Image 1 (cartoon, rainbow, N blue to C red):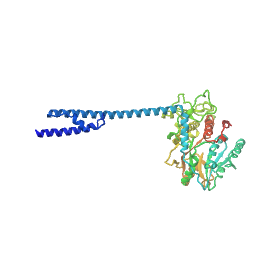
Image 2 (cartoon, rainbow, N blue to C red):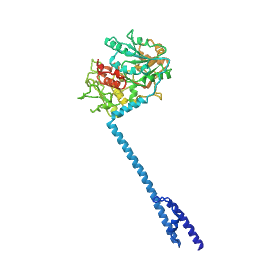
Image 3 (tube, one colour):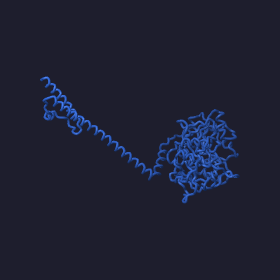
Image 4 (cartoon, rainbow, N blue to C red):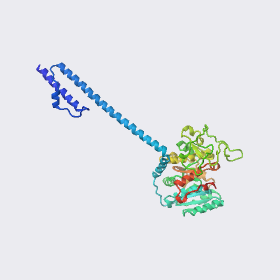
Length: 480
């Protein structure tokens, strides 16, 4: 009997200890359990049935406490999730409102951010950098001038001088050039003794000079393009020359289509009622293309006896000074546009088709506005692409004077400088795909391209983003 009483007492003490622990974690009353209160409130046990009843009550109490803790934990998690969802909803709502009511401001910020993040270039010393411009067409040069001045060493750029090689007998063009070279001491005019490319290249043979050959219809030069060509040439002496990544080239347009840089655009079928005389360069201000697009773009053929399309003819410009409009950026829409027929061929459709050229250039403005110029990049981590002796365009190319000298005379400077001589010398042509420039038109494209409003848009962009306040360009200069 005495032993039974001792067992009951020990069991009671153990139960009380468990009860004390449970009370200490009671979420309804965080105060620790009091031994005195426990002694007052504990019942007396006279037999084993009372003890069993007490243990059952304590077990129920423990289960209630555990259930309460679980409910509290689940409630806390639920509250956290609700707060997260509400915060996310408010953030997305604000982003939508900003995008709806301040779209232009956001795009301008993207442009500014891209410029602020551009590398801070330092011009190397010990040699000259000369821009070699094959001159003849003022309507393009008036735009190019702003980019060249921005890149002059006197303005913090890389060009020590710009050599204007006058390849024209038109007196108006010559007078325009005379006025232009008087605007800065870094501009120099040179007469070409013979009407061939050899006479131009014979001028560019100084051993300690890096020449950057520039066509006069280059209408956009990315701010990193000239520094990148110079440094890429220094870092890759085995390359015979380094070329820019050209927008509107029959080879790089094939790459740009596959890197996502060319976007779905089509020419506006009919002139709008209130067409602006001075269009903005920003595609975000264009209306979307509303007509039903064809299943694929109809290139058509020039009429018999004509080298170019007529206005309104299938495959030609729909109306004078027309614009191109964006379609939603989908793979299906891109297949309905001219770029879907691009090909890797120096003499292919990208060389003759004005439509492929126009689509690329309207896409350029959208990529600038959205701050997504990286879409043009391809090649390795350094941005370089080895042409493996394939022919490429000479529109914008860096080459040492001594490397020019060893290639003269030439019958076809583009074929020799980019393909034949690199193969013979085992010194490749490299494209720096981060050095982005835009070329307006090849010979077969220029008549139809002149019926777009692209030059007005290039002029508007240059006035806002490149030209100085005392060198603002007037639209009347576009239409000599």
